[in-house]
Length: 198
Ligand SMILES: NC(=O)c1ccc[n+]([C@@H]2O[C@H](COP(=O)([O-])OP(=O)(O)OC[C@H]3O[C@@H](n4cnc5c(N)ncnc54)[C@H](OP(=O)(O)O)[C@@H]3O)[C@@H](O)[C@H]2O)c1
Image 1 (cartoon, rainbow, N blue to C red):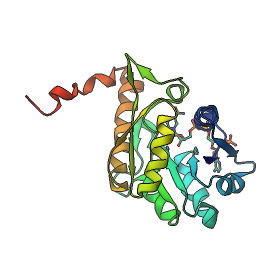
Image 2 (image 1 turned 180 degrees about the vertical axis):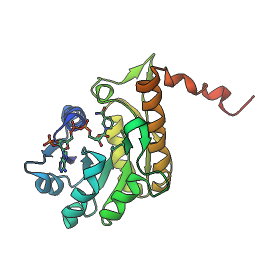
Image 3 (image 1 turned 90 degrees about the horizontal axis):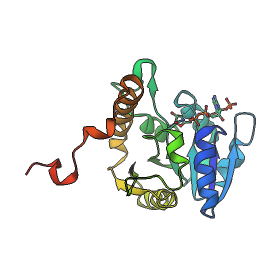
């Protein structure tokens, strides 16, 4: 695949390195230049590896360059005190979709720290990391499922883009538990056999 990455920070490096290793062509653009070139290059997928506060404006400015792209949103609209910055309004991913109406936004890769995305592979106690995806376009979801598998992870269908706010809120909850409380947040969910009662 041809993948464009907007942003040249930690998430850009972690996921870009994984996808290059899997054989994809990856072009990265940063604030100092190359954002449009990366978007145009990424005919299969474009990763938004930018701060939430900047992403809608950057995406809006790219217009046609994002047409028909699977636009992967890993941003976390989480502020001080692990507060969800979008509370009471559309999800971050929905705001991005409004700013890039010709692209196909898929929420993914936002739930784990960048160091997890660097693991080869992210497998814990023999279980591959599961990555929830939210999106409305079947072809774009297929692309992102493959990019998840390329890391050694398992994609999970988490519903349409109207469910992305739940994944973003989950990130706020988990980060608060991990960082704020030092808690083993993975332990909040029971195994599947017990999840829906006996
Ligand atoms: N780090 C994590 O563990 C993690 C995990 C999951 C999701 N995320 C999400 O992933 C996204 C990227 O995080 P990151 O850790 O990769 O951040 P980062 O290392 O700080 O990189 C952010 C990138 O965005 C660029 N940027 C900042 N403001 C910009 C603007 N106004 N216009 C254009 N580019 C701008 C930065 O450019 P400069 O270098 O010039 O400032 C940098 O290239 C965030 O939304 C974050 O919530 C992060």
